[in-house]
Length: 96
Image 1 (cartoon, one colour):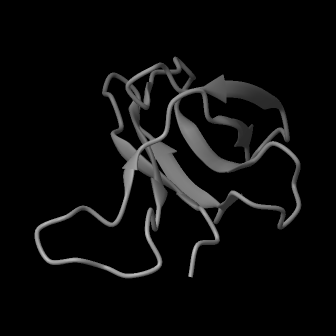
Image 2: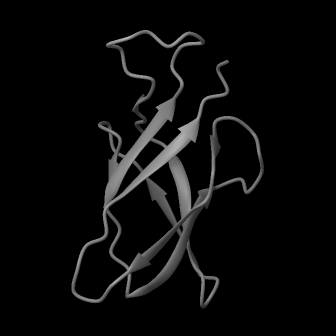
């Protein structure tokens, strides 16, 4: 379970304003590093997601697999049996 964000949201950071915001309807894949099996994930309207997977190591990565924007730098996650793993997935908007 986790949160998906996108940022930066402005080419100039301003004190007191967030550099990233929740990213609704963001699609990405969760790839099991042992088997290569992929599961598609999509965040909800608030940028939240939850996926039930067995214990193991996973890579969260862009659905396209490329560097097109918005870009998701792959995130490696270890899921431990009997617990939830919280993760923040951050997409780069390309705004500079």
